[in-house]
Length: 227
Image 1 (cartoon, rainbow, N blue to C red):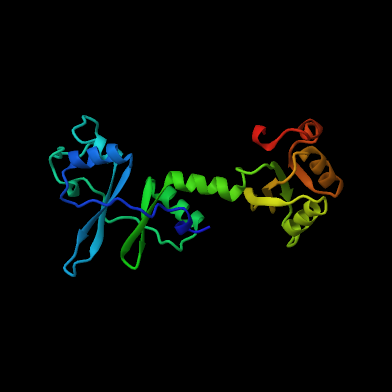
Image 2 (image 1 turned 45 degrees about the horizontal axis):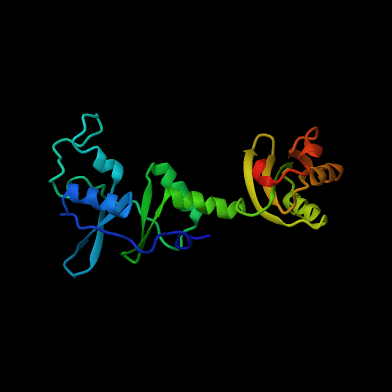
């Protein structure tokens, strides 16, 4: 999945000279939390010069230590905007852009292609992408298996699941322990009889972490959304 698959394409951008109070009113009117800020350059093209969030604006005039000094609601938003802007590209992988957003501790990133603002992507968008990528929105059950580091371990697990007539919707790594050379993978599989599948995999020599062996029979008829 790429950023272009989850970004908001109809971006509301503002001018850096717009008064901060007007920006806040527009945020309330449009129910938008982040505004990219663009300015026309000498060639007449709009250039991304900053970004402002609702949190930035709410701090204006506050007595909190984080409040910007000497800034009021009548000032142009350029006095408050964050610049330079951390951006992403429409062809960037979702997980890489999400990692960048987390590292930088920001709530949204404008999407830029060849210098042009083409979208914006937020933390909520990344969360929704995670739901889609993991298959949580579909009827399925969760299975965790600890694998050793031999080359075909994951392929063998997939084959064992498929041999039971069950499809795997997603696979994620939930734990990586280099010291032990093992990897715990979380699968979402198209069965509600997860206990039966877990017991079958154990009989094939797989170390099933979830559901636990003592609980597996009780979980065999519980749908995934209750797990």
